[in-house]
Length: 274
Ligand SMILES: NC(=O)c1ccc[n+]([C@@H]2O[C@H](COP(=O)([O-])OP(=O)(O)OC[C@H]3O[C@@H](n4cnc5c(N)ncnc54)[C@H](OP(=O)(O)O)[C@@H]3O)[C@@H](O)[C@H]2O)c1
Image (tube, rainbow, N blue to C red):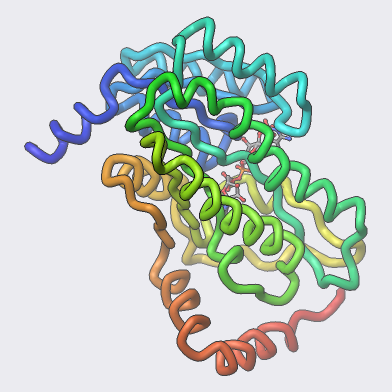
């Protein structure tokens, strides 16, 4: 009870901007911040899905600002930030969540597919973060950037190298940015979900001829990831790796990377082109 009250105080009346808020983890995060009293700016490309999410946010008694924004567009991002400034004057939490997957072997995906994934997952994140810095500075100390990575950004697995590489780039950039902004009191946090049940698999790019893999049963819910995000935000946790298998993988890779290479090879062997 006391903890719930403290959590709410941390978010009450503050402003969260969430990219990729039209579905999955982003949409659940918008509702999780709103449930704790934060106003929410929701950004993504699908306007009707954004409006639906915004209505749900408003039903929780806070303000919602849906903004159509493709993070690959400099112009869209500039408009996102100026609309946020006009509506709220500043920004307390920037949640860089918009993302796209890529499935297939390094030999199989095209350079265009790889560039598209980096354009959204990495360059989009950099673009939004740079543009948002003046608004985050307006609320410092205490404002935050939360970057949504993946357990696959910590360890390469077969058929997921292109996607994992885009998230590994996010991880490294996060460390640099954390150091650069520390003196101003802007915290930079990394949250790395494991497998999560969302539209991610339907939306992702597939190398030609590579079929969708089977949907595993042990995926997290988007709501559980959203709760982890607000928890990380409240506790200012610099790094959160989600799911027990995800944490085990990151730890095993650190302690016994050679052994983990053998495990990864086993995963690769049965993965055949259809
Ligand atoms: N699902 C998983 O298993 C999993 C695991 C680890 C990490 N993640 C990460 O979690 C984040 C959210 O993914 P999710 O699982 O919630 O998948 P999702 O349901 O497919 O959500 C992806 C979101 O990103 C938005 N988006 C995609 N391209 C965009 C662009 N160019 N500009 C603006 N928004 C864009 C989509 O909205 P529009 O299409 O409307 O633009 C959508 O709202 C991603 O960064 C993903 O890499 C997911």
